[in-house]
Picture 1 (tube, rainbow, N blue to C red):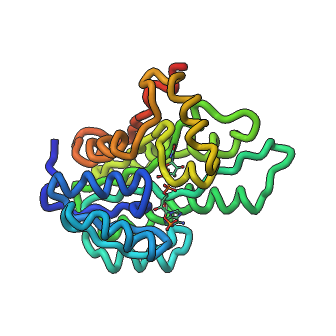
Picture 2 (cartoon, rainbow, N blue to C red):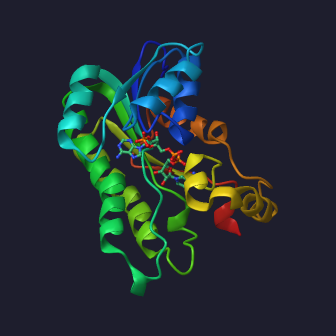
Length: 243
Ligand SMILES: NC(=O)c1ccc[n+]([C@@H]2O[C@H](COP(=O)([O-])OP(=O)(O)OC[C@H]3O[C@@H](n4cnc5c(N)ncnc54)[C@H](OP(=O)(O)O)[C@@H]3O)[C@@H](O)[C@H]2O)c1
């Protein structure tokens, strides 16, 4: 396994949730981390929370805005690994009720944003580096009704990574596919119903509980360090695909 000691990692989506988990775990391996997200306030709060963890700096950028993405990479300079966890809550309309503006916004933030990150990362990503994107359990266990768009978008990441892994070789490109993780995204989706929802779902999972960001972060660390792994999708879902 390659070491993360002395490397620089950009975590787009690192101000909260799964990305914050990666930004917390990576410095323990000796990496310097740049976290990015749209909200300067969230970034400041994350920097403060990670103050004891090592070198963590926030740079505000919206990954749906090409000028912002360019500026993020210019400010960061040469770096070793890109991790993208950013995304907004998925649409959950039955297909006949689809709000096309919401769907376009979701695809923009999740898939087009990832393409834009890859487009501009290649200029300053050092040889031997990697990109890791994030898909999710909804491609394997789509909510019914209303899961078709999120399933299609999440599913597309495996193919994006496989093709990009060939195009950018020897740069490695991989995907983490998380199951349900207790993050702020769920507060946005189900609000106060979150605790009850999780209590109902947890016993149905082989792992017997909902994940925390700390459960998922090691998958990103592994993919950054595993010099022989590329074009791969790593499922960290507590066995959810089996039930
Ligand atoms: N949580 C789960 O159960 C779960 C399961 C499967 C897959 N996933 C996927 O995992 C990813 C992370 O989810 P999460 O639960 O960690 O979400 P989260 O807690 O809501 O965190 C999302 C992060 O992305 C940033 N972000 C959102 N839109 C952005 C944009 N346009 N440009 C830059 N940064 C942006 C947010 O900061 P700002 O708001 O300040 O921009 C925040 O830092 C998502 O793509 C989600 O689809 C999550």
